[in-house]
Length: 215
Ligand code: ADP
Ligand code: ADP
Ligand code: ZN
Image (cartoon, rainbow, N blue to C red; front, side, top):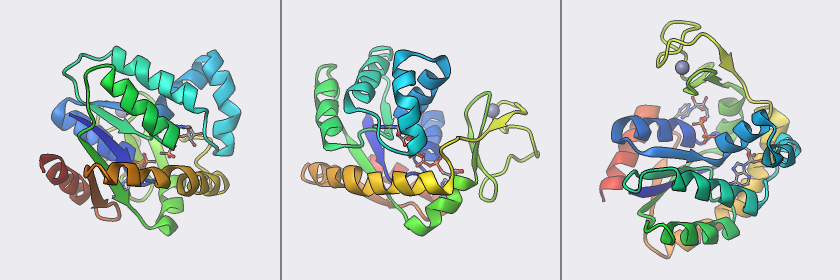
């Protein structure tokens, strides 16, 4: 199964993708994570992407589609893919079709996480992740069970993203509205979009996604 999780920054895509990975052995393909790894490693892609990401604007379609193609090639053909944060433009949606077709895959579901934008700034400014395993947390909504210790791996170091600040978030929301939301009709026309209430409790969002994937 190949699915897209679609929604603005802070909608819960990464959180829900991590849960699907654990439950179904699918693979999360997050272009944001791939780009952050490239920035950290100082690759040419990373050098090009860094300033764009810091401004909250979109990195070029060519770069992200190449990252996705490479990642799919590195996966077993029977492992399902969860696209998280990709595609974000009409051009990327078109590339994804070609990338999947070229690898004998097809898109089964697009899950749209519907959220109230006013809540997203709070979600994003409170977000942090385990520096060791990447598990996501939130200051108010999902603290580690033992303070300072990752539930998943026992790690004790956590990090916050430089672009998770109130100003950059507004640019990222504007980018989402202008460039990403308009790709939904492409998938609606194919009858593969499931709308899920992203404002619900995390467990309820997971249950709603699971139900949508069975239909
Ligand atoms: P995205 O990947 O869409 O940008 P995340 O999954 O990283 O979003 O979620 C953003 C922040 O909001 C995280 O800190 C996460 O713990 C928190 N969060 C995710 N889903 C919910 C939810 N349903 N209710 C409250 N907080 C949530
Ligand atoms: P969030 O889900 O919180 O918006 P991501 O981790 O998905 O954050 O993305 C962080 C940043 O990386 C984006 O603001 C953008 O600069 C860049 N980025 C990630 N994915 C893409 C993509 N598919 N196309 C263009 N830029 C991207
Ligand atoms: Zn961890």
